[in-house]
Length: 169
Image 1 (cartoon, helix red, strand yellow):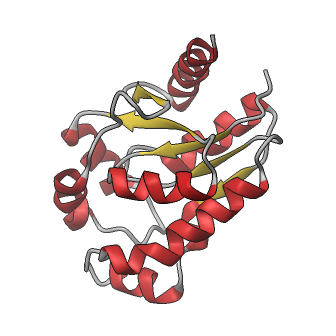
Image 2 (cartoon, helix red, strand yellow):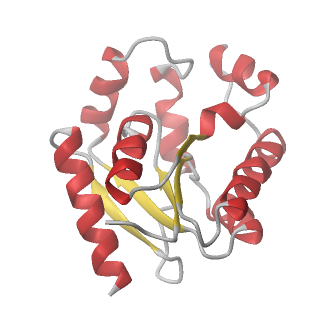
Image 3 (cartoon, one colour):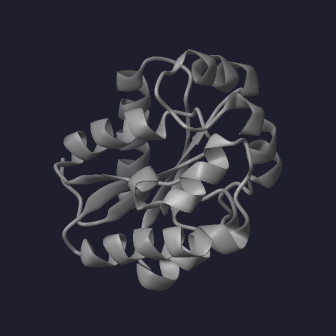
């Protein structure tokens, strides 16, 4: 399966964006980009200290993701990005209007458990509440699908591929 779309794998920290993103890209036959790699060092320092980012902090990050997505327009790609607020998704869409969102959703307890067990990541579980408070799920006029994160990475990826296929029809 291949897609000319750029897919943004979104959701709160701990939903598996960094795990599912590459698996989805592989299934779709397109390149993958990790949104964390687009953060300026100042943002990483803030998050590592347990300080949530402001909208001002996020602007250059979202613009960089949008620029990457724009460069992949018509070629396809997958990028992970929390994209928690509608305004953030709108900012990405302003650069790449045809992006499609895969919103990874799940039970807070499951997500916190996964965050507790991951290694070498700068996002502490202390910020999970602020992530859920900030989250604005996809709205009816936004192109995308919600995919539950219960199960194995392969099961989640399969649900995402199936949902995207249904969206394309």
